[in-house]
Length: 122
Image 1 (cartoon, one colour):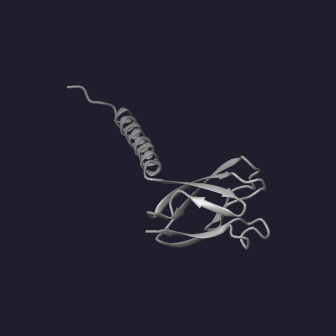
Image 2 (cartoon, one colour):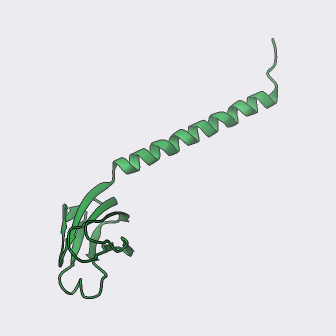
Image 3 (tube, helix red, strand yellow):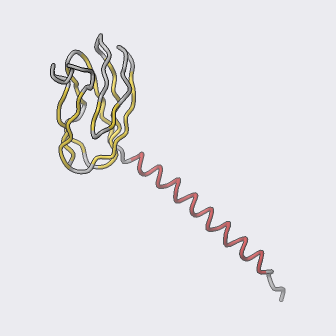
């Protein structure tokens, strides 16, 4: 009976561990994006219309479109989109725990004019 050299056994083991790690990472990335909640946000003068006002905790993907005639942005939990020109869109991904989270447009005067609200996360 032939003995397998130790280096061959170790190489096989290391390659197996690497392949399993890569496959686990790919599976994890797919499952987290598959469980993300998508919320479309229409911004206009001077309001936001969200497709959902209540979402489950976890990753929330906001797709914000400026349907108004002035520039707007969207801010929630310390993250915000860039300033969006009329007709432009941006995506904002935020991980939210359970609770209530205020959102707003940060353009001076816009939140005071009504561009704000609260998202409930269950």
